Length: 436
Image 1 (cartoon, rainbow, N blue to C red):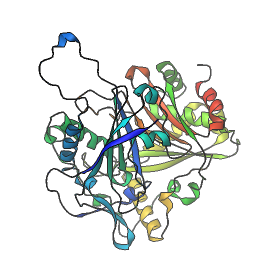
Image 2: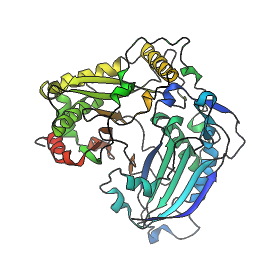
Image 3: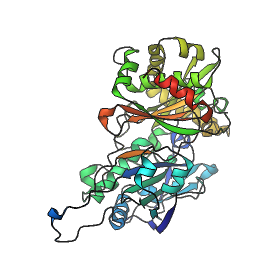
């Protein structure tokens, strides 16, 4: 499979924007220093019928000029994305709001949408073909990159690479909704009556820092795994299986807690972990509504903290599934204002010690990290030619990493993306699906 780049340009904001440096919070600095690659797939539109009439010219499917103009307008309220990563006092990363622009690429592919997306699996190859590449996530790198790839079948893939320090998943949706709405001819105010909030000092550490909880999830000792070859598969969880999984847990259990517990058990089985070993699950929690006072709904930045659920492998395997789901639920529930402030202060102290605690990415083989995209309108990305048929990460960054998301058709249950060493795949699938 190949793509040919036919256009590559920097798109600057369409109006003057503030020139300033933007302070980054400890939560921004606690994420991997990479661009998050996402891909949106839009199948080819149906061919016009002779009965439609041929009068007047219609705009081409995914006209690059329309997307480019809308991107320039979206970068006005989201002006930090038009800037560059920089190193501030003491080497602390910050955003230099230069207004230089985001990278906009147009490419043509020699493959069809079916060939790429029928059984799509996130991979380095998918990222190479569909998302612009940045040699480094360090200063003075670009912060926003997009690629519009015209497929051989007439469909289109839109790949985005947004630097993770600029935003989390909720922020990404905020930006994509604005960009796509502007492309459809709406104005910014009709999408978000209030502009995005870029001031991140609301998440500044206390002086002096005061750590009131333990935060082993950010400790280097728990992020000391070695890079291992892995592949990513998409596992469908149809309604019947989802109902069966949830019925094994307490009434009212969330889909995230139930499916993650089921996934955790299948991983322990597949990897053949020793029953007396400890297995750890990294749980991310959105803090926007958990702080007191709450963050503004328009907060644009990273507002995610992690907690760690540690369970003996033997208990994951032998205890009722509801036992594991309840442990996950308790970890998510305990993330409140006091916990978040403690995380921020812990990261401040680690930074003062010169620790790289938050920056490790590779987990030991006993562990997993599962992110929920449930309830997030990932498919709410209509540029004017319809919603995408499929949205997914273009690449995963380590074995044991998973996403739980709504299936493309909401009546089809949920989907699980999970990265695992290839030698464990067959056993994992058998454990995940059981007698289904």
